[in-house]
Amino acid sequence: MKKVLFSLIFLIFLIVSCGETTGVEPKNKGLAGFAVEFAEDFDLGSPEHRIANPEGGIVTTIDITALGYDKKPLTDYSGEVEIGMLYGENSAVSRITMKNGYAGNIEVKMRYCLDNDRVVVQEVKKHEGEETYEPTGKIGVSPVFYTEVATISAIQGTVKGAKGAPSAFNNRNLTLKDKEMVVIAVIEGGFYLHEVGAEDYSSVYMYTYSTPYVDDNKEESMSLPVGTLIESANGSVFEFFGFTEMSFPTFHPVYVNKNGKKELKIDTSLIPAPKDVGDILTDNDEMEKHEASLVTVKNVSVAWFNEEDSSYIEYSQFPLETADGKTIMAQTLYTAPLFNAVAEKPEEGKTSHHYNFTGILKQHTSARPSTWILVPRDMDDIECLDCK
Image (cartoon, rainbow, N blue to C red; front, side, top):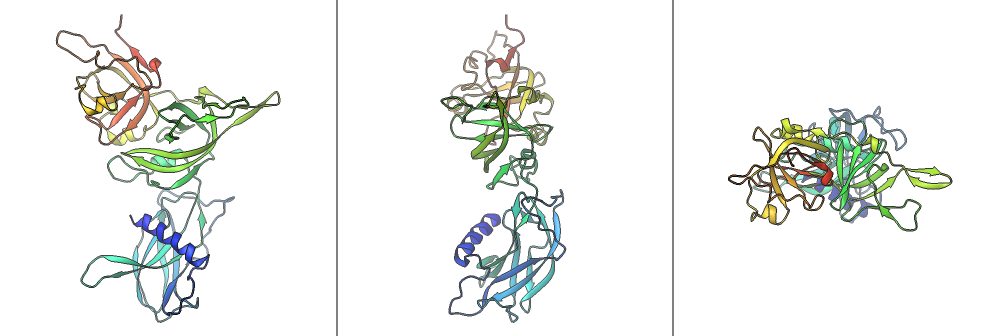
């Protein structure tokens, strides 16, 4: 909530100030905003030369100066301010008291920074008789600094401790680049993108809301082929019931020149082998590492379910059970519609078939009885072990 509030106030601030940190000078006097400066030795980086983004955060100090509407230091100002980030998170001291219009050498520890960011300082006050602080709208922002660009493994692997392990970059628009990326599946109004070489947190769902199309030197566009290499992609990170997506993405495939013609670069050998997750189905932290990736569960059968339940009627979801009693949900309606889950239900006097199920691993925190859902890419992902 604080991050959203900082962003909203910052946007309003830019509109009002037209680039000035103190706003348009009104007739009244007093605090207009703050000047926020990094320590002299802090490297801001640039879009061409980005600074490192260590796991523990970027640590430096800032100086804060209260400014009047004449853009000069307001030396008689005293008040409380909160120190946050435009996008990331300051995990050092977050609230301080300024005296004589100045606070210096204040440590900031800037976490969850990707691409570019700023430190945001805002005045806060308590209402009479209340304990909570509320922002007054008087703010200041630091110069922009440039950190490493986004990658799939950074977006998926940097998570916060809430149900569904949401990405720390939720609600942020980011551009994926600088890593080799390949399309591993095209289903459900979008496609799944894999960061080549990454073992964990390696894939993400690109939610295009319709079939993704590309230009491949044809008269008409074609559906995005599996195995296509993607040079860069931009979208807004969004958590859908614990499942990390990049919504409304734009993407740029890699093209090669063949005989003077532009063609998509396709290499299905870069698609990783499915990870066997049968032993970790009950370990959400381990399963989270493989969200949106290709996985497999072996020697499973359809467990009993009520076909009148909404999860099956509305979403065609049904449970698979391993030999040792673990479960995972499956969904075959749109990608493997010939699989008849109702016919595979265990009934008295009937032996259920056993399968190796492969597909994309999704998460939905309200699913029953498991938050994890396996979506095969097609019928070839369902191998019957004892069918005649």
